[in-house]
Length: 134
Image (cartoon, rainbow, N blue to C red; front, side):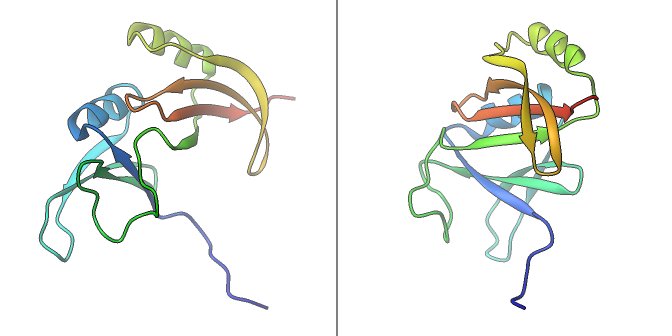
């Protein structure tokens, strides 16, 4: 049997504006921002939620190693929530964030989910989902 992975620790988003991205993800999605220093001594930024994090790379100078074609607006991310989607819809309205689609039924990693879709400042597709009822 080949070796296997067990969880996602972090992913990287390449963004145009670190401050704007941090503002969106903390204000709109409730994530925590973190400034950290990796082994090379540089200053980097991440967004933390649950046991995961999103590292942020500036599009003008992404850190090595990096994806073959890093670029803002190329991600499609699905986040799970325990908060009912009607509360999310009300919250997003107060933040002047347009919902592009939903609520709509989808299939998540562990089964049926109900999702709404929006965009972050770079145009990445953000899906917010709850387990489907019934």
